[in-house]
Amino acid sequence: MRESPETAALVGAVAASRFQRVREAVLLRTLGATRGQLLRILLAEYASLGVLAAATAILLSAAAAWALPPAGGKSYQSTSPVPDQ
Image (tube, rainbow, N blue to C red; front, side):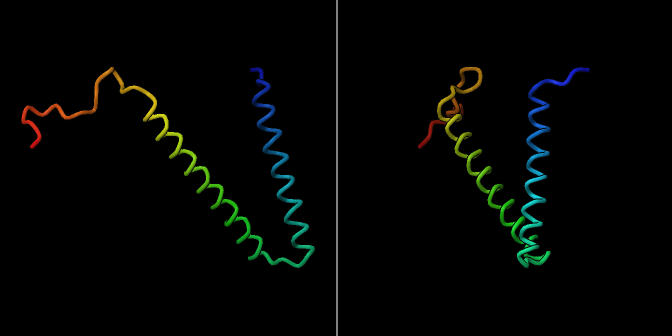
């Protein structure tokens, strides 16, 4: 089975990211950072990335829900036989 160029690019990006993270950790340890400090730095970075990704997903899904027509051309209005009062 042949790998696509996209797969090779993704594998290369992940490998480069891992190498960069190890290099950064070694530099911080050399400057005197403790393992706990490194852990807190990574947790803060991943948490901020997670919050940013969630906010982006919420905004894009809200924009798509507003811009796209309802599925099957049906409206989301009430179909109750009793009129609203």
